[in-house]
Length: 193
Ligand SMILES: Nc1nc2c(ncn2[C@@H]2O[C@H](COP(=O)(O)OP(=O)(O)O)[C@@H](O)[C@H]2O)c(=O)[nH]1
Ligand SMILES: [Mg+2]
Image (tube, rainbow, N blue to C red; front, side, top):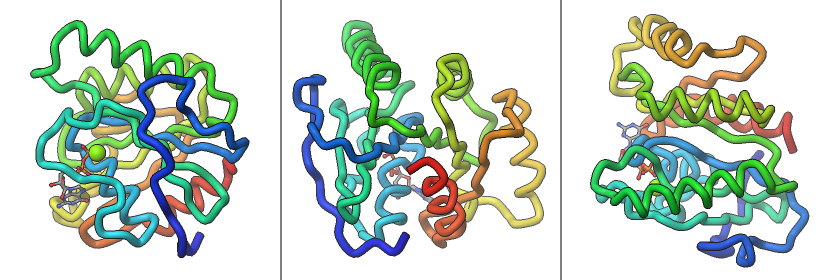
């Protein structure tokens, strides 16, 4: 998709605030600081519409971005942020789970992981959770620019093995820095919308 128009619609804290629009939604899930907002910005050719932040865990809302009047990207607050209190974490969990399991417009979740590292327990739980609820998932392994090309395969294998990756799912090597994987990511998304 060649994106010309993109705008933030709402930062929602409760389901009542989700857009009433029937447009398909693609959600971004992943650890704080893994590169979710950067991924959105890359796909929509913007430097900073989706807020990228060096303060992990700051986004505690579901941010809906309207793209080309064709779909919404939903930037989900990152998990695995140690400094968030237990109460905050529980609140986060309920909000995300309600959204993921009950939102009819949700067509697929992009699970963003860091290609450099073995997936965390949170990464594995998220992927397995999506599989359990039969929610279509695309795994995007980002920050590929930080690894030499010759090691991409090895890292991809490590990520897939740890996740118990289902070979029926789509897997995209990505970098917001070099824009590698951008077209492939769009193609993966377009299969669901
Ligand atoms: N080198 C490199 N840095 C990235 C990439 N994606 C994100 N970052 C950096 O990682 C940090 C966190 O990114 P952000 O998109 O805010 O992560 P989020 O918390 O998951 O939304 C920022 O400093 C980004 O510039 C990438 O593909 N390559
Ligand atoms: Mg973000």
